[in-house]
Length: 205
Image 1 (tube, rainbow, N blue to C red):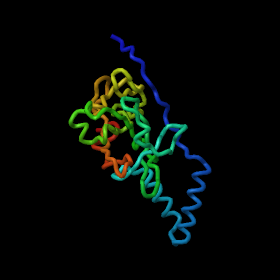
Image 2 (cartoon, rainbow, N blue to C red; image 1 turned 30 degrees about the horizontal axis):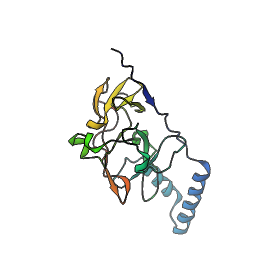
Image 3 (cartoon, one colour; image 1 turned 30 degrees about the vertical axis):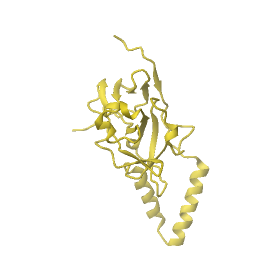
Image 4 (tube, one colour; image 1 turned 135 degrees about the vertical axis):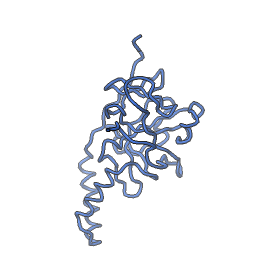
């Protein structure tokens, strides 16, 4: 039987930063580096490394979607039972957004904590769960949301994941669950409590 449940799709994030903000940040960093006598190529290499690095404990989150891209995500931005929010981790110290690799994209979803199974509650924070946004089948972004069944949907090959049960596969060709990213609330701020709990994307032999 064909599933006629309407799906919500979120657009993929624009990859470029706002020009003026980027130039302003670069100018400030260059001034600091010049005063410290640090080679400019070292600064550039460090920024690239930080942007490509996988999420780490202490990272916060910013919107990945156009319109609010780069704005820090708060608990109030996540409605209970609502569709997932596409996010990038951000280094809380350097303010480097980890958008250098598409494999760093994260999904944030919020539920009533009592609706999560025991394994999922272990890496959730006040009902908020985070998973890799990259489908484990063909590495498309998981942008769809089945509002009735409360499952994540990948539009490329129709894989579905249940975020209340550790993002296990409930439909489609995906071979395994989406890796979870453990969360914690630190001083009232949603932060990563550690790295992804598994390999991101599809496995290659």
